[in-house]
Image (cartoon, rainbow, N blue to C red):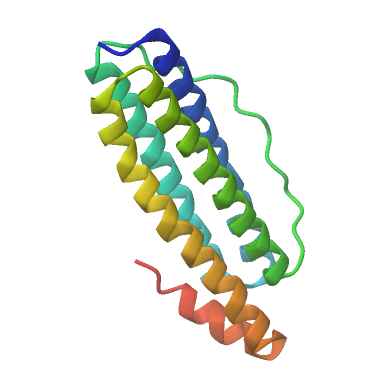
Length: 160
C-alpha cells in the first residue's frame, strides 16, 4: 500500500510529466513552423517519452492500491528563440525534472517505501541520460554554429 504523502507526490509528478510533454510538443510545433522538421521530430519523441513517464507513474500508484489523480496542467510557452536557445531550455528543464525525481526518492525513503524507491531509480537513471543528451545537443550547436544547424536538424530527425 502506498502512503497518502507518496501518492500525492507522485500525482504531482504525473502532472509535471504531462506539462513537460506539452512543453516539448509546443517546441515541436515551433520547429515545424520554422522549417526545422528534424528538431520537430526529436521534440515529438521527447513529448511521447514524457507522456509514457506519466502513464508509468499512474499505473504504479494504482498497482500499489492508490488513486492516480490528474491535477491541473498549466499552459506552456508557445514562443521560442533560436535552436540553441530552445535546446538550452530543454537542458534546464531536464535538470529541473531530475530535481523533482530526486525529491520523490527522498519522500519514498522517508516513508520507508523500498518498492517505490526501486521504481523511482529507473527514472533517476533515465534523467541522467536525458540531461546528458540535451547538454550534448547544446554543446554541438555551440561548437558547430549556425552554419551546421540544418545538418544537425536532419540528424536529429532520425531519432528512434
